[in-house]
Length: 432
Image (cartoon, rainbow, N blue to C red; front, side, top):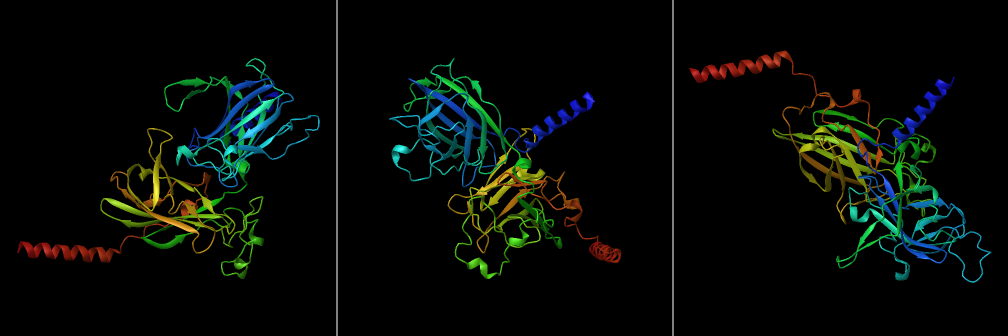
């Protein structure tokens, strides 16, 4: 009996780690770093920095939400660059009243345009944080917090615990805070280094299994050599929203307020057989002697969502030799240095980095020119189609392999014999 229980526990532990592991981004995580920059009479001042080290998964609108539990009876005296959603019961304080007295504070980023004296470096973006692979300079969010009723030295400070990150919904699992070597800062003139008095890190990893029951996108396929279009699988993203969906020609689309996002981000989808908010279409367009060409289109079927800073990650063996990408920016992703088969596509800034809501403008598209490796290139057995597709870090459902567009049957024997006959006659005439 003990052996069975032990085996079950091991399986659960292994599954929990596997669920948060992404083979295309094995080192991706969100690291939350606390740097104590000064001690106060009853606590400390810390700079909290959230770094999104995920290559193709960003934190989209309405942004991140961070919470934790205090180890003792700490309070937050003040914050710069962020705020807690609730103050809590601060009735025991007279005179100066803390910003937050809750045992488990919940913190959100400030919105753009707040007064200058409330701003902090890398703050005030509404909680939106870019993916590291897309824009490292925008993959950081930070704020400053002053803590009271806390330890006043490295030995007396108790680390917060039970960290929770929503980005913006569920899916992240955060580990315990761990003390690490103090962060070293460089002054503006780059002539002097300073050091944090104490530093601890919290690492959060993402699991699509925890985030949602069904995929959030699907893939359809087509090719120049077959008239058949392989659609997204039926109910690829679940059909629970089918009762509330809207047909593309419905008059409800023009109703005032119908496009306004809900607080819980509940989608309003266009009625489709797949019922996905996002469809990625991969079309094998042309086959040249030394190159081949693919057209990629991303379509939004959600009437309540605009996707800013969107990303599209694709795994295909020929992405090791991309010649040109039209209309999208492109960056190879090398999770394993010896294998170059994954790339990230994203919109050009101020051109198509915003995927609009469902409708006539709710799509973005590009073409990719790839150089052939004559030892591996083939149009047979679906080789020209992607192995994995991710939109905004969510893996999309691909059609079953046996439904992929296939090459047409070989030409009839009599047609081949006729071709051989013509060629033979031409050769004989030339010799004669």
